[in-house]
Every structure is written in structure tokens, then in C-alpha cells.
Length: 238
Ligand SMILES: [Zn+2]
Ligand SMILES: [Zn+2]
Image (cartoon, rainbow, N blue to C red):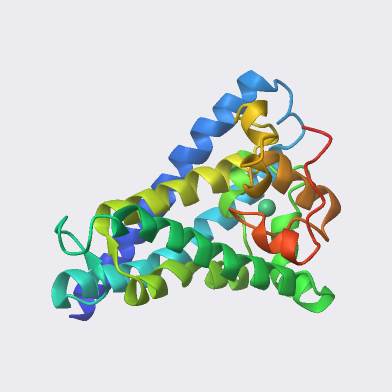
């Protein structure tokens, strides 16, 4: 049993690491074309971003691997595979719930990590990226990585979700984690500055967090930032 759990954790770590290298690699390549010179003089920083991110991959991989093993071997979790296991209207609702709950967890833990003591111990690594790059997507101190790594493995025990919708959540998580740090906006201005855009977090919102620290704490949505008066709007620099 322990061998199977270890193998599952190792496989998940490898998947998370490869997913990181592929997604950050693609968007770093796009950044080189869009903003030639953005990465100039950031070589040392990027090496450190990759190092912290690969360490985070192991921290994300372990709980994910244990849960994946339990799901396969013992039917743990509320992940389902039959399309009719839940009403059809629930299918798109589940990923929205996951994103909202993840965002809520992230907002409050992130705000806490901006208190001076916790900042130094847990969050300074992430803010050492100045300016952030696509490689900073998982550049977290291990303590911060743990706070992020437990969210989805816990939610799958609480909130039913179709396995394909879980894949969608992971895709959104990966793409937004990378693109919010790459230093330019890939979404059209018409969306970013629209009414809907006013509720969504993209690169121009998170960039401002990296510039000013004490604002724009959210992950996917601006709801908590707006409710709590911490939303300062979009960065003027991108
Ligand atoms: Zn960030
Ligand atoms: Zn922060």
C-alpha cells in the first residue's frame, strides 16, 4: 500500500512539475516575442523562480497523489465520472464553486501573509520577483506552497465535481497562475475594461499587487477585494 501511495505522489509531482515547465515555458516564450527585453537582466531571478516552483511541485504533488490514490483504490472523494451522476445544471456550477472557494481561501490567507512576521516567513519569496515573470507562477516558499496545495485535495471531499470539470478547474488555475505574472495583458482591452472584467482578475490586476503589495489580494475574482476595500484597480504599467 505504501509503495502505491509513494508512486502516486511521485507521479503527481512529475505531472505538476512538467505542467509548470510547459505552461510557464510557453508564456515566457510569448513574452519574449511580445515584450522583447522584458527578461533581460532577470536571469538570476528566473533561475530562483524555477527552483522555488519545482520545490512547490513536490509539495503540491504529495497531497494530490495521496488523494488520487484514494480515489482510484477506495473510491474516496466526491469526484464522479458518469455524466448523469448529478443533474446536468450542476455540471458547470461545480467549477464555479471550486474557483469561488479557492479564491476565498486564497484572499484571506494571502492577506494574512502580508502581515509583517508572516510575510517574512512565508511570502517574501513570492514577492522577490520584481517584476514577476511567467516562471513565478509557483514561486512560493514551502510554507506558502502548503497553504495552496491543500485546497483542491480538500475540496474534492466536500463538493461533488465531474472529473472533466475538475480538469477545467486545474487548467484555469494553471493558465491564470502563469499569465497573471508574465508582465502583459493577453485578454482584450474590451474585456478587461468591461463590467464583467471589473470582477475578474487578470495580469493587469495582479501586477498592481506586485507593485504596491498592500492591495489586490485576490486570485480569480475581485469580489473580496471590492467588499473589503482592498481593490485598487489595474496597474498603470501594463
Ligand atoms: Zn503573485
Ligand atoms: Zn502578496
